[in-house]
Length: 280
Image (cartoon, rainbow, N blue to C red):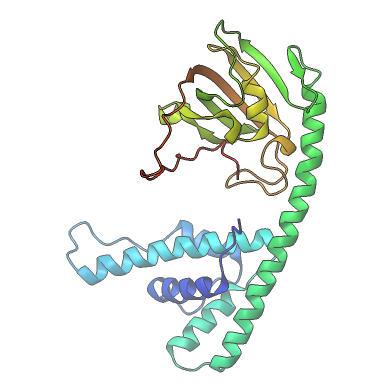
C-alpha cells in the first residue's frame, strides 16, 4: 500500500493549513525550523472564548498543521525535501492573486511531482523487500539454533510452550484460537487477545504457515510460530506487514469447532469475517 500522499492532497492541505495558521510572511526555511515552530504553536483560544470563528479557525489550522508536518516527514523518507519558504511564498502569492504560474503550469508541475513520488515509492518498496528478505533469512538461521526451536521441511519454525492433550485438527477443520502476531522486532500487528475475542476460521483458508503449524497442535496447546515470508504474505506484504517479512505468532488452540451447517441454495451465503491470518 502506498503510504505517501498524492500531491493534489498535499497542495490542498498546505493551502488551507498555512492560510489558517500562518500570520508571519517570513517563514522558517528549513523543515527543522518548521518542526520547532510546530512544537510552539500559537496561543490557543481562551477557555471563555465564545467566537465560533475563532474556535473553528484554530481547530482547522491545528489539524491541517499536523497533517502537513506528517506529509513533509514522509516526503523526506523518499528523499524529497521541499523548501518551506517556497511553499509559503506560493500560498502568499495565491492569496494575493499574484501567481507566477498559470493554471496549466500548476497542473503540469503537480502531475510531474505525483509521478516522482510514485517512482520513489516503488523504488523504496523494492529496496525494502530485498532487505527484508535477507534480514528474514538471517533471523531464521539464528533462531533455528535456539533451544526448543524445531523446523519443518517447509521452513516453518515452532517452539512448544505448552503441549495440550486434545485432538489435532486437520486442514479441513474449523478451529478456534487466541493469537498475537508480531514482526521479528516485536512490533505487534494483530492480536485476538487484545480484542478479547478468539478467532474462528477454517484452517485451510489462512496463510500456509498457519495451516501447517496449527495441525501440529493438540487442542489446549500453546505454540510460538516463526513463519518465513513464503509461508506468510510473501513479497507483497499486507497492511502493516511489510513485504518479505518473517512473522512471529503466539498461538493457543482452544478447540476444534463443528463445521457450520450447509447453506441451502435459496439462502444467501454469509461472508466470513476476515482476520489478520486470512489469505490475501
